[in-house]
Image 1: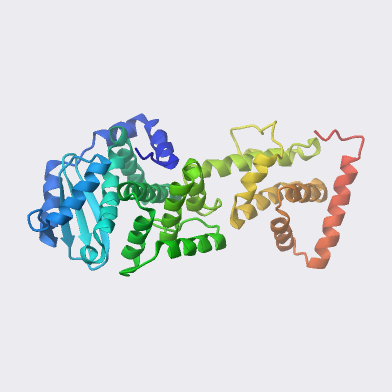
Image 2 (image 1 turned 90 degrees about the vertical axis):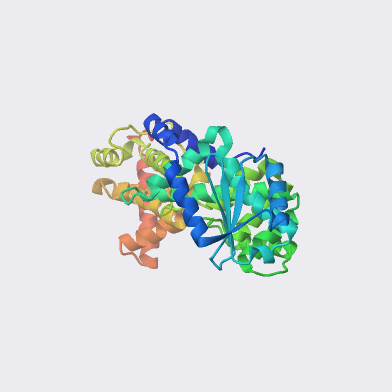
Length: 399
């Protein structure tokens, strides 16, 4: 059995704790009249492929069903759309696969098996654990489609969809038994080419991944190079598959693309960072304490916060816009008390160096304080000297 991604399980667990929401969505089913309306629309806008006229196609479909343990009856349709695509719609007791474009001509029998394996894996995932992941899918998409919802819900829904497609790719690989055929099918469907090389495309995928660190921009499906690379990792490094693919999909944490989970990570990291910069007693002035309360009105500073490898990694795994955010947070405190300004800037320069944020901090200081390259150097040196004076004073017990 193919395991869902941790993101699937984490989101399921998050919503299951919300008893009323989970109960309502788990009880809400597609009504019989809705099913009939869908099938009527399908009949009006597509061609139903019957087992009697296309026995080979259904033979391949049944092979995929057997390999995945799918038992519901399935009907195949050819839509009027000219794009090469496929989709599946399923209810409790039946399912429908809708093909579009020239798929039946483009793909050979082995590749058609891959396609059916992928589409049937949607059914497989959403029937796991009493339908938990289908319920989760409806909850997050309902919230994300509400115009009043915060953007991180949309990002969460997007990632849930991307991981779902990768799960279904694993189902396709299981059904096919061939990494090469599975990747060839993906590339054929997306390019329309009749002949492609999986080996060449994997080389291309590796080259792309060496050049970028931003993660997937896909709205409904990950980019093909990510899907191909994920399949290769599953085949060759199964033990580390989920952690490696998560890094590829998510990339470094982006301030403008936070989801339900890394939103909390940024919140916690911000709190930890502020606790670190306010750890010396001399930084804990009335103004700095008041500013902390503006950031976190209902919680005290973390008394055990310090810069270790784990904290450095959180900063390192941030995109530039998030690193700049952390630099601005530090500067916010450095400027809130004019009596401590120079020493405090020396203090955050030291912390920035420890966190490899020197470039971001330098850029922001020059911008916000109107410093040139020449005046910045003298200013930074003066702030460091002022800081050292405090640290060497007998009046100050630093921690």
